[in-house]
Length: 368
Ligand SMILES: NC(=O)c1ccc[n+]([C@@H]2O[C@H](COP(=O)([O-])OP(=O)(O)OC[C@H]3O[C@@H](n4cnc5c(N)ncnc54)[C@H](O)[C@@H]3O)[C@@H](O)[C@H]2O)c1
Ligand SMILES: O=C(O)C(=O)C[C@@H](O)[C@H](O)[C@H](O)COP(=O)(O)O
Ligand SMILES: [Zn+2]
Image (cartoon, rainbow, N blue to C red):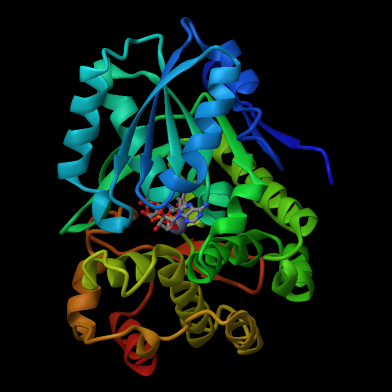
């Protein structure tokens, strides 16, 4: 078995390590103890993760003499809203979590985003540790400090930048993921190759079908993705420019998630996969890249068994105009203008604000 890999995120006073390896939950006590002012933590997790990964985490903390209380929230995207944010913050206050204490987010991106935001606003900021248990959370959401909740108006519209103090990505925890959840996380992995690393995309075309069964390959893919994200975040922590490239596929994906009510009709990573396919389609129609690029993206997503078209989303969707109206709430909008992450080719994304409305509607219509 390969040794854990550490990606350091050098953000000055907010610098932290992302540890990636097998068995990190079993070693969590020793990893977390140096961060603690007193031997006590609060864990927040969800109802699917709790029976699988909370007992070993508790045991590891106990071996290091750390007391732990846990809150278990319902699993699923619908949890990432005001109601469960309130529940989480009030529970942390009831636990008398102090400024120098540490909150642990054990779960996927939903738990990481919600708990990170709770930590950001609790007593104006307490530290938190991400223990990501989905592929998506390991490669993306646990790193970079974007925290928040959804609104019916749009995705992640209420939130804060709040960096974790440590990320412990236990590759073995991914073994219990449902196949659909694993694949959804793969949407964000493919995104890294597509936005900025053609060589990584080549590597994924070769190796991605074996990621689920091969822990060494999985560790390599997670570490590469995290290193790519960390490099961008360090240059542009609060998304004044370059960081928006990490949003490839998200203008489409987030509108589709809002349109499907943040339900399991469409998982975030599935929306990102569809969004990447549409962003490449749009790029080709605008003459930014050749038709070969969207064809390659589509072929890869199909081979992985991922959705790439609106027609693959169960149930009815609003019409093009309504979807474009939902995109108007995107955080990249400037002066009321939509901005998209488009591409000059595989691994060559750029931000554009000159997408003709007619062409956008055409791309959406043709994807039905
Ligand atoms: N902050 C960021 O930078 C960032 C980046 C990407 C995505 N996100 C957000 O992340 C969220 C999606 O995250 P997600 O895909 O992890 O969804 P999720 O947290 O809902 O997890 C997916 C499902 O897997 C279950 N699960 C988690 N770990 C498991 C395990 N080890 N074994 C079995 N089941 C497990 C969960 O209970 C859930 O049912 C979205 O809200 C998205 O907006 C945030
Ligand atoms: O970290 C980022 O920056 C990202 O854009 C990563 C995305 O995968 C993630 O879904 C993020 O939450 C989207 O950000 P948002 O600002 O569009 O809500
Ligand atoms: Zn995302």
